[in-house]
Length: 259
Image (cartoon, rainbow, N blue to C red; front, side, top):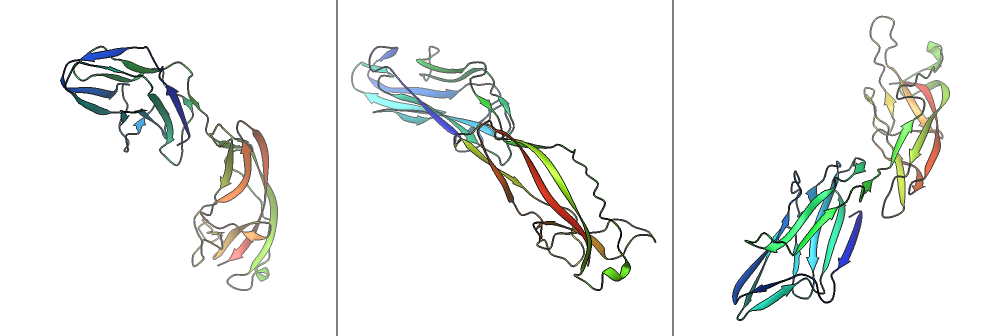
């Protein structure tokens, strides 16, 4: 749950139903067009990875939309929203979320099951909820050429030996987005085609060149602070406050590796 908000109904007054003796049923409905149940009564929105869940609670009624509240009475009875609360939860439903403003319009209604005069409706106004996901942009572009240089064949003398090397930086511009916690942790991962007979922890990229001129069994290893970058490992590179923008420099070194 990214954020949860409650709205308390008036303690007295407000709309009510007057119902005769017997079983009375009231339907809490999701009415926003296009919303689908993602499970656990979380409904999709127009922003990827963001869902909404609606509920109403009180002394006698505790329901999560959609649902039906059933009540049996032996005499004419008034039903109202008095003293109850309506709850909206904004929920992350995927590892990666989109950004944007949730669509405006009517989202729920609460009415006598066969009625057409809801006692409670909920609306989102324009720009009521805007999702801003943490993100980073590589300032140098997604493709960077690093010239490691030239080495002699004798500089490498067996599997696992290294030679040469070149320092390089990757510049990022990162935004902390908006979150209930007030901060966002920024992570990076390293991936590529692993060199033959090496492990993810060694982080050696295979030489994808082919032909007679290609170096055989020689890959490239990337390091951070003298330690190889492990394939698929998550590295924390910083923590940003809500809506903070920061420039982050990632210093690396690339070298030849015999595999």
